[in-house]
Image 1 (spheres, one colour):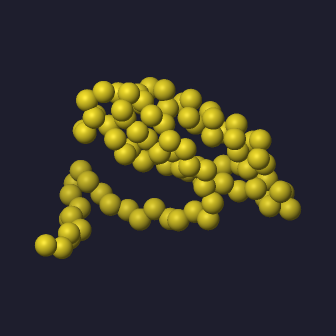
Image 2 (image 1 turned 180 degrees about the horizontal axis):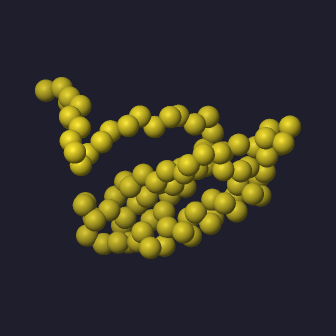
Length: 90
């Protein structure tokens, strides 16, 4: 059986997210309430290497309340589009 796309409803909408040429990706394991630690780490990493955020960040919820019984097992991927500061400033 072939997986067919689901139809949109009043409560569920699908949209194509544009690709980004370069991104910083990091994983956060644990409660959603501590995700800011991963965002802070990503920001420090980008700053140290001469990058800036170039668009909206994304969070991909890989494991969560729907399939893991413990918050300690929840897994979120944080994706941040990047640009080199030197390329933006010329």
